[in-house]
Length: 181
Ligand SMILES: Cc1cc2nc3c(=O)[nH]c(=O)nc-3n(C[C@H](O)[C@H](O)[C@H](O)COP(=O)(O)O)c2cc1C
Figure (cartoon, rainbow, N blue to C red):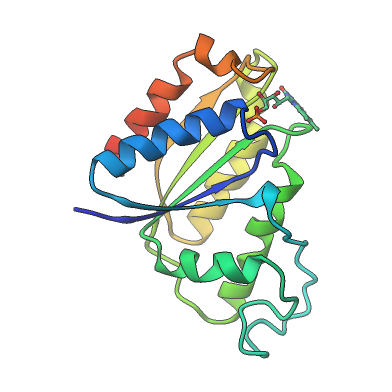
């Protein structure tokens, strides 16, 4: 079945490791007939949630009208949400974390974002795979809270510089993730 897939990236490096995996995933997902929409959070202006609780009161998802309000309709429409990012300081990079935080406006605004599938593609420099827990655990808990099914995770340690991902099977794993949605 063809699904609407929304990909949100978190790296500022267009030639980087998570983008390479993202592109492998997208190619494979489109080849399977899915419709893919992509937003690169680090190339957009999205600030953090101000917890003002005025979501949708001005007619827009967030009263602070930045690029999040362009992403929000795509989140509502999506069957599958795919988050891709590097690890920054054992955690989620600020650029994509802002987008994730702002999903709060959809919940406070009473929109039904449950029942979706989601997936995670992430990488880090260190060889220790537990370093990826800093992005894996919050994303798994976010998925559980929102009643999203985690369709798959591609978690690749040991990649630092752009191109390092090609010394791993990360791009193949990312392409195979398309089989799981
Ligand atoms: C600000 C910053 C913080 C980082 N923090 C970590 C870290 O805590 N642990 C780690 O293993 N790698 C860390 N890295 C390395 C990146 O995760 C790694 O280079 C990754 O391959 C970058 O992915 P990208 O090419 O998709 O941007 C950090 C990189 C930057 C720029």
